Amino acid sequence: MPGIGHKVWAVPDGYIPSWSHGPEPDMVSHEAVCILNTGDEDAHLELTVYFSDREPVGPYRIVAPARRTIHLRLNDLQEPEPIPVGKEYALVVRSDVPVVVQHSRLDTRQAENTLMTTMAFPVSE
Image (cartoon, rainbow, N blue to C red; front, side):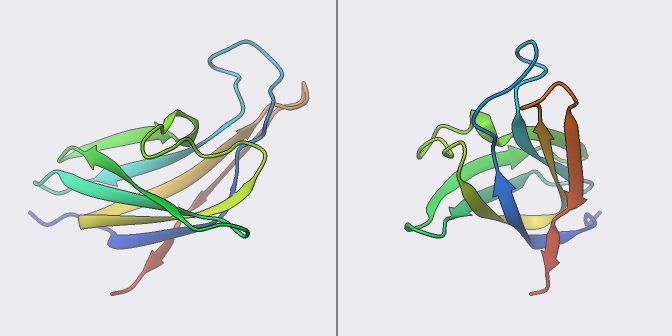
């Protein structure tokens, strides 16, 4: 059965706070993409990160198994390089099968924590 969603998603507002308030690992400021793959095939994803003052970085390669969801902390990406903290960026997610992408940010720089989440922008092909 084909999955729901799109093959290309854009997240224009990325920012990983450079410090946190609270116990690790749960309260570390971070960003995440949540990927839902409702189809019968694994989704092979490529993430590309864009900056205002340098060339893009990527692709970061991720697999979202068929009929599963993954919650990927962007702070944890290492290859080809970690996403810099304290720096604005944007993100494009490309998949070989339709998926749904949600973007979240946990900002714990003060004791009153902030959680922001939004759907990524689906790009029509």
